[in-house]
Length: 283
Image: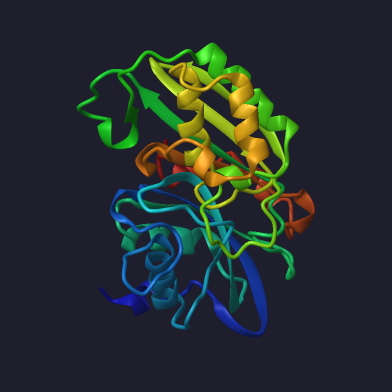
């Protein structure tokens, strides 16, 4: 591919670094997660390679967080810096979508304030986990099949208990490098969408493996193997060994990240929110 032809007319150079947010979606099936790593293909590495080729300078992305191996995202955010002045974000978005693999799509690129941070400025993240009790030949790689009967009313009662706590050590992967296991859960519950059971959880931050461990423990409640009081005791124990087995990552989706309006450079972001679907279909 002639990357120069993709590169020209995108921007002219300036001595001032400018920061941009990039919003994207990806199917995580073929990736070892979001974060770049030495011995595995990742979403971050794919996009950095494409951006660096188009902008003809090394580009490093800072993501809003990490998603584990096989986990998907319908709305992920990251930021990068560029020396470009008057970068044409729309053109760059289109060119990225032409050279990136089919399983990664860029929704939009928007300018933000110089100190805006994709990870630390996020107000909340929302994940969804999808469960079915049927054999799904066309969606099996994005659903987790559970054939045992589940009491979703009881699982919703247990999910509401999450909102009463802040320390979620019981649902965190061991030996991580975080300073605190405290999170503020704003929403947690089960719904049914087109015969698929969906667990939605929103929080200001998430620990490694947290959503998958919570879902696995809620399934124990749904199967009648763990009482509501037992679920509460799991949280209060702050012991990962007390919680249920983590469910597979292939049915987990990062679906939204919210930011304060003050970090964006202009009002174009709100308008682009309504138009980002023009670049790709996600979900």
